[in-house]
Length: 633
Ligand code: ADP
Image (tube, rainbow, N blue to C red):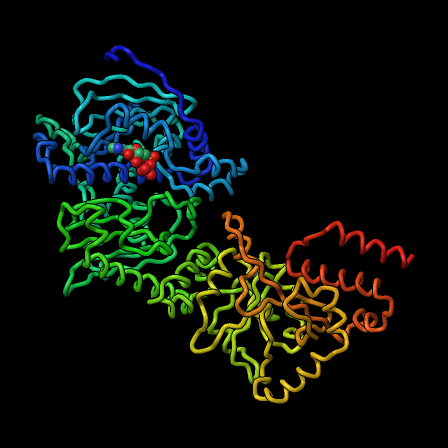
């Protein structure tokens, strides 16, 4: 490719879609393109500063890092220049012509065409370079990599394609030249631009400069030539003391590091002195990213060592279950040439990670206490991820448990809303209750209408209703909260509040009940499918239910294991019948053994359907039911 030759390449499909989305959905807030371009420029400078620690020569004779912003009102252009790392031809194609995030296509398929809901989706994706097309009908990028190769000019009108050509004589770094749309010419006005630049760049550790306004020529004298001067304070935000930084500045800095266009929910900024010295500034976003569950997605904090940027996505400073947290760690002790491998085994890192984890958790606890509504927003977005922590982070289990929120059978709780904390649950215990009751199923409907809840509803005992995919796993490791045991109402022999004291009596009563005349007859029919048959204490409205034994694997876990290809040993449930139910009373009087077996078969299958299980022989069930229905006609 020679300078004269220009080639045209098509945007990757995803890139094109994202570009269109960006242009249309963020329109009402389009000045944020400048924040995005300044962020990219400052990242590019950070990257070069880092590489130059090892190789000074990359800087050539231009070692004063800067971002220059200039405009030409006549030509209707706005230019953002940085003397950072720059890009070679392949990098330009990879970074400006394609979107590398995996899962993007799937994410974009959720677009509705409705600007309002789509712009929320952009929030989950992150704004970026393409936002330039909100204000420009043509964007030109001229860039020269610090690491060698030809200079490149990239141009596009933001439609299907872009052009590339070799560009001679470029300075190191990147110039982004926006050819402003007619309705965006206010971005080529000094006063307006200066205001925005100050707002978006004050917290960045690189000077962002604009031309000083040229003073009018004095009589007979020469006009003063305009020079670039810094418009920001160029002090990295986290290096300032907390009392000096305003909320709006923290919010702006968050948007700079996260490419989010919404405000963060909360943040925590701390300087730690002592054995290890470091500063951490961590944020909780408002919305979960679309790829929160994609294991391959880079996650983690931005790492600086003595204010020098070292790497993005340093994942060693937070546990996996806090992967949604954004922020910065600036360490005074780590070496500048620290690598990911070193981070993995360094004691200092482990100690910082433990401390930062605690900070995040106490920030959340604080939010839950002071602003429950806001905490609810957090929980609705990130609750399931936090549950991973409650299951696996033993050291922080107490504070993580406090943060959990569940749906519940309590009358004040709207259907399916996960709003009940364990402290609140404990406050509502009924007399004699010393356990936390819960039920776990694949869907809220299945769980909340389960026959297992009947006796609890009747007695006004609250039961937590769990139906997230992760819940059964969570409850397999969460055994108690503040010395109160969790009890699965679908398992074992239920002990209702106040019953323990009457245990001796109970046992004798149980004995009597076990000798209920139906036990033997029913066992003869379903004996091979169950561990036992017994009259139920938990049913008030339904005729029968299935009960897991204490140590059996739950339905959810079983499904997950089976889906992953593992064969699970069979575990038989108990079959419990409601001796007071008219259907069961009717059974007792049934003398025809075939009919008896038919009726028991139907009850058994219904019990397994009611808890969301699947039938071994669904066609058999339908046949039996139809035979019974026919008799009614
Ligand atoms: P993001 O910054 O979230 O990765 P962008 O769309 O804003 O997404 O930018 C895509 C990529 O293009 C960046 O990750 C970076 O590699 C490259 N890039 C953008 N602007 C610059 C710049 N000024 N200098 C060097 N590289 C840049």
